[in-house]
Image 1 (spheres, rainbow, N blue to C red):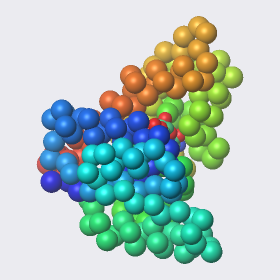
Image 2 (cartoon, protein in one colour; image 1 turned 90 degrees about the vertical axis):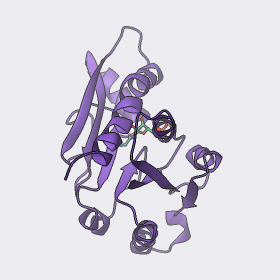
Image 3 (cartoon, rainbow, N blue to C red; image 1 turned 30 degrees about the vertical axis):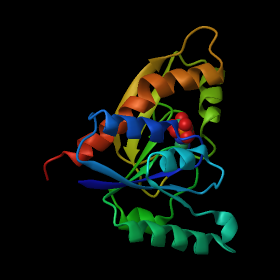
Image 4 (cartoon, rainbow, N blue to C red; image 1 turned 135 degrees about the vertical axis):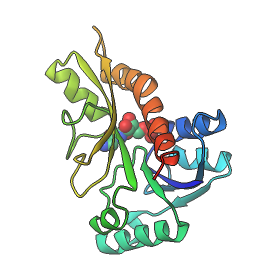
Length: 197
Ligand code: GAR
C-alpha cells in the first residue's frame, strides 16, 4: 500500500477527486493517511474529517520564522511515514530540505499546460485570468514531480482543454478541473502506487 499525504490550502476538490477514485476502485494500492493544510479554514480539512482521514493544520502563523514553519512541516510529514506527498492546491512553496528528502516522492497538480502560465504568482484563478488575457485557444492541466524550482519538475501527465468563446476565468477553471485535474491527479497516484520497481 502506498501511504499518501495530501497537502491542501483551499476547497479541496482535487482531494475529493482522489478520495472518490479510491472509493470507486479506480485508484488502488493506496491509503490516504493524512491531509495537511497551511490554512485552518480550508474546506479540504472538512472533507478529510468526513472521510475518516487525519486532518492536520501546520500554519506559518503559528511560527515566528519561516525556518521554524518549514521544520514543523517536515517533522509532521516525517512522522506520518509516507511514500508519496500529493500537492492538491497547496499554495506554499515546499521547503528545499523537504524536496531533497522526498526527491521524486512529491507530485503537484497545476492548472495549465506547463511551461505556460506557471511559476511565481501563477496559482488558482490567476492562471486562468492570464490564459484568457493572452488569448490562448488551448489550456489544460499538468501533474509533475516537485523539484527545487516553481513548477519546474519532471512532467508526469498533461491534458489539453479547449478555451471556448465567452469563457470567464471561473468557467475555464471549472472545465479544466472537471475534465483534466480531477482525472490526471488520481491517475498519477494510481500509476505510482502500482508501478513495478
Ligand atoms: C486547483 O485548480 C489546482 O490546480 C490549483 O489550485 C486549485 C485548488 O483547487 N493549484 C495551483 O494553482 C498550484 N500552483 P482545490 O482546492 O479545489 O483542489
